[in-house]
Length: 224
Image (cartoon, rainbow, N blue to C red; front, side, top):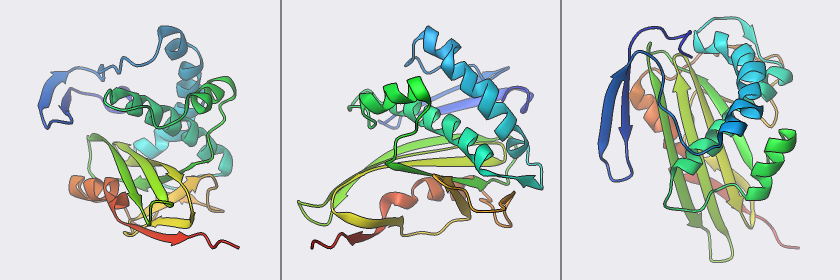
């Protein structure tokens, strides 16, 4: 990402309490100290070099006419899930959203757990990197709880959203708000060519996209 976005970088991080931390650096050097050196330099590094760079570089720089077959979507999904887990572990005030068994299986076999979906969107502004995580809890009744983790982040012209869902008693869950985003995991649409005709146009639209799971359209399972 340093190579794709040359020049000085201005960092702004807002904590859960609303406190801002800001600094300027010549490169992207902010580190999330939540993984060990061995993992960071082995299988995680392999995801960066073998999947993220070849599958995402053209999307980040905004090139047009890029085909997105399932193989490319799978590579993006590996990077997206890994990053979502890292962001989740930055929150020290709660248990990790994804179970330890799922995280360990991902480390061993790069198997993404089934309880999530992923979307991607084009982003028009230049020179931005944005990230936001959120946790949502709700229920139709005491017997129908739902817990969600949403990780949305973008680099230059490419935005990815990972939505994890722990649910009981639902047959359908969707955001109540539509945005110009394409669901690419677990399955990408046939013959997808990037970018789509519509994109997120401003940082405010990115924010609204990140917040879109606050309100849901849900259907309860029918008991036989």
